[in-house]
Structure formats: C-alpha cells, structure tokens
Length: 160
Length: 239
Ligand SMILES: [Zn+2]
Image (cartoon, rainbow over all chains, first blue to last red; front, side, top):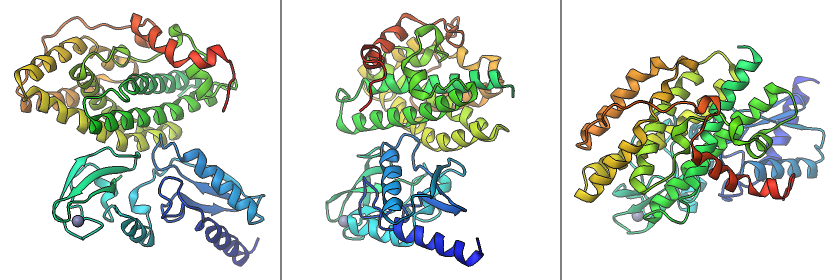
C-alpha cells in the first residue's frame, strides 16, 4: 500500500471513530479520550483506560460496529496495554468538551504524578476555590469535588 | 523465565488481586458512608481488572485454552496461589483498612518492580496497575491516620485490626519472587504512616505461611463458594 493510501485509510478510521462516544461520558469520543492509538497496516490498535474499566468491552464492540458500518470490516482490532494510557492523551478538544459537560478535565502533563494534589477548577464558574469530597467517584476515572463559590458539586477526570 | 515459572508467577499476581477484589466487593452497599462505599468498590474494580489481565496471561502461557474466567471460576481452593492476607475476613472497617494498608503498600512496590522487569507482558500489566495502586495505598494510609488518630474507639479498633492482620505480613516477603529486597522500603512506608497516626508497630509474631503453596485458611473456601456459585450451578453460563 502506498504512503498516501495508508494515510487516507488512517484518516478515514479516525474520522469514523471520532463519532463513537465513550459509553460512560458520551460528550467525548473514543478518539478524544486517546483510547484509539494508531493504525498499523490493516490493524487498529486501542488501549484501555483503567484495567478494570467496565466499559472496555462495550467500547470495543462500539468501535467494531462503527468500522463495519463504515465498510471497514476487514480492519482488525488489537488491544495493547503498553505504553499505559494516561490522561495526557486526552485531546484539547476532549478537555474542552469535558469542561462544557460539567467534568473538570485533568491538567496537561498531570499523568506523570497522578496522586499528587493539584488545583482543581470548577467547570461551572471557573473558581479554583474548590474541595475534594471523594477521590473515588461514579466511575474509575472520576473523583468527586465541590465548588466553594458557586456551591455546586462536580466530577473531575482523575489524573492518571 | 521458563514457562512454568512464569505461569506460577502470573497466577500468584492474579490470585492476589482477584481474592482481594472479591473481599472488598463484599462491602458494596455496606460501607460506613457513601464516599467510602464508592472508594472500596472502585478499588475492588481495579483489582478485578488487574486479576483479569494476569490470569488471562497465565492461561495464555499455559496454553491449555483456559482464560481468566476459567481460572477464576473453575479451580478449587487448593489450586489458588494468593497470599493469606488477602483472604482474611473484612471484620470491621478498621480491620479492612488495616489489611488494605498492608497489602496496597506492598503491591505498589511489587508492581513497580514488575513494570521494570524484563518479561514484557508482565511489565505491561504492572505499569498500568501501579498507577491505580498508588491511589489505593494513599486511601488506606489516610484512613489509618484518621482512625488511629481519631477517637478512643476508632484507635482501639485500628490497633486491633493491625494486630489481626500482622501475622500475614511475613508471607508477602517470601523469597520466591526475590521479595526480601522490598521489605526495607515497605517497613519505612508503614512506619511513617503509623507514626503519623500515633500508633506503634504491632509486636512481632510468628508469621502464618502457606498460601503460595495452596495451604489456605478456612476463609478462602467460603469466599470461593460465593464467587464461583453461578459457574458451578450453571457451568459455562454467559449473558
Ligand atoms: Zn463553581
């Protein structure tokens, strides 16, 4: 396959998958989240976010269905753990969409020191006057916070 | 690493995570408060995810067509290779926290080593797991401080929980996986948190061993009875 043809196949796959929402946070696509890693020949490489993420199987099925609908049934899906997924792979557009959805996005570069405290900005009013309520939230990837200014509780995408 | 050695190694890592995860999931809906319920369920989920990866790898190495489900649901108690610590009953909340504190701090050091080990398939799982376990260790350590440095009642219970679990510590450092090298750093971590909590190290006692050879306490059989019920009643059931 020529380089140009391969590029267009990759573009086509990413175009299709940018329409596949994450099943638990549907405001972002599997591409925005960095779950879709690369296209190698006829193989699409994806990676799980958390080892125990219950959405992993659904995500793979959704990707398979989207590829099939796009006439790409011959593309194989391969799952890789290495290098491990980090929140640094969430795209800038993905971060903006999370914020608009009411989930504070992780700061860029935070994946390297996941447990360390950082300032968390309220996704509603922008205040940094916020407090962590629970480090473990409604899904493995989120923690629970509250804003001390607008008083709203909110989720935060955990640094990982 | 020879295949049979690698199989045993992956099995130990998988069984530790599986049994610990199953134990923690018993708290779901029963924890003292909502945030703790969420935390324990999340930690359990991470551990079950790690177990799935390690046991799938063990099955792949073995090459007899067994996957993580087959290894989790169709083995009997003597074939489990987890350490005795993880199968101990939850007891009260302080006893659960004591067990998690000792385990997660150890598991984090272990996974850090595995992430840097030459076996690429083990290393890949280790590198993912270590980031999750850092959260578990921090959660448990914070609760040790909160309970130890809390009321007279919470302090008494925290001390009792640590006393109960302490006899299962030596087994974690069995030379099998070259583990004694980890002991110094583990001791330092445990000491640091206990000092902050105003607690003392439990008195040394003779360690209980045998989990790695399949010699388990009576508690594991009961845990498996519940965990394996569905696959034993309806073998091969799927949904
Ligand atoms: Zn606010």
